[in-house]
Image 1 (cartoon, rainbow, N blue to C red):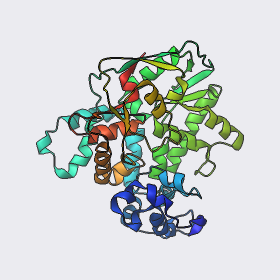
Image 2: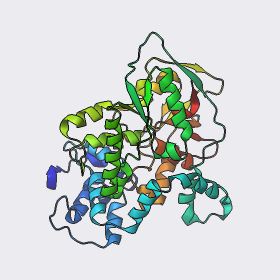
Image 3: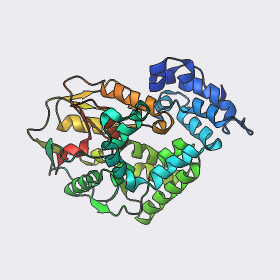
Image 4: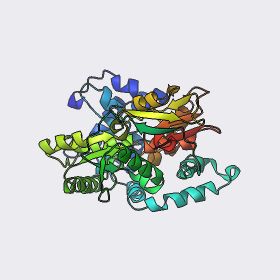
Length: 384
């Protein structure tokens, strides 16, 4: 195969879609074999397939990136699929762009409308879409598990920090941003304005909307440069992954030259990594056992050890992926929701509360969780 695929099968071992279906065409290497003939990456004159055929081939990917992590050649089925979608545009991709770029302020309204639909009257075909819409609404009262404080003997670098909140926090979970700002100030960091930031563009990459993706990247880089290239604190794994790809020269429209790419990448930091020496004063609401869902897009997960340190009783889930990544929510909502249900069911029975550090995973697991199970961002359960 092109680009040196050795057919070793390591990608199939970590692909959540292949794990469910166990059919070769659902594996990353199988999709690569099927899609290369229509990809501009591999052909100067890609074959003109009808959208329906491209959709059927390209939709069965969660965009988790696990295949690239496992591949010795760093081949990515998700990147190939993004390129195919870019060269075979369809109106659904434009609608996804509209949803992300323009309709964010309407997300809470959609959540309220979805919540008003009686459970028994929901057509089966709409159930996989209504549940995520309902999850856009935040619980009115969330129990606090602990008050966080820093070890005063540990000094933090007062260099400026810019907080990147992401689309979900900006539109439906503003409390995450407020909580993150209070934590950073309590740790002695100097916060600078984040008003010039927009979506990281990662979801536009998966949708094949490269022009929009590049515009978003340029806007975020301009904001960073204008503030003197501060550190960027991120509390969403998917946002962090999308921002880190700015420094990948192999990405379409790579916006940074090598020297500045290194600066950009070193400036990115998970919020939890900045909360050095965190001490927790637990409340009676902290459960004895809780679940931790590891997002696919944490290349180096800082949240898991951070939470294990401040909260005892952590149990990780057994599923690979919650099904929220990429644009699977648009291309195959039923598959996306079934993956979420499997993920939510992969925790011990006693772990009724699930924490994670990805905005999308929170919404997905909230939509899929059975009665009595809650999914929260870890910011939801701490105060300072």
